[in-house]
Length: 164
Image (cartoon, rainbow, N blue to C red; front, side, top):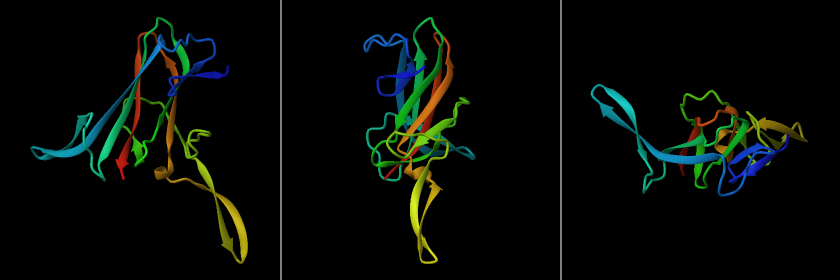
């Protein structure tokens, strides 16, 4: 089955009810500023939701909650989240989700667990083109495929970014 796009972030198998205003799936993005604070003898992370001002070097958590509002289970629900301009991908968010992420370095045209890019180098006087694994700071879109999203259930996926 070929997927259809819903709200530019979510894709569902063909045949799902996809009326723009009455989607069976709700997506909510929670962005939080990540700071470390001392709590007694321990240093712990503090998440400040919806920060108003962030400075270069700040780390942000981006978590998407996909909620199934219907009484039907959906399979292979695809959630895509772009890495915002002016930031770089740092790593996955520590969630209880076992959903692996795939990454794009070409604006979402292709995805891979380890995207590759071509580089041209000169070796022994000859020009050689090779594929090399892209650095995480080159990722510009992240995608997860939720194997199932049960009726009235929700799943969370996300990643961290650093402000340039």
